[in-house]
Image: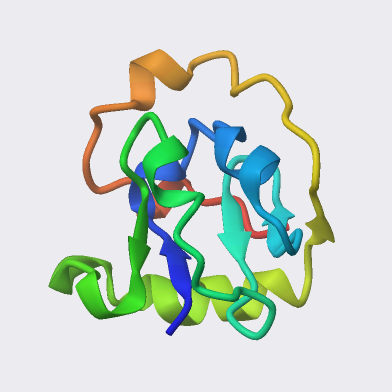
Length: 108
């Protein structure tokens, strides 16, 4: 089982998780991060580092976040790898508690 980045990350993109990942399995888009499920070793180090609770083990994924399994898999093959911490997006605090942000995901 891999860990999955979920909707809470959209428009926040904190990278605390990236800094602790021993296998560099995070990939970065304009306003979201994803985990490559084939590279994730299921160590769980990333999950507690996320300040917006956007990372879940696949077997503990809330039912409304199941589409993010496919989103993580697909986008991790298209986006560039990220292995160092960066600043969160400028309006991360504004979007941190917002729900239903999938329509804001920029896939390019």
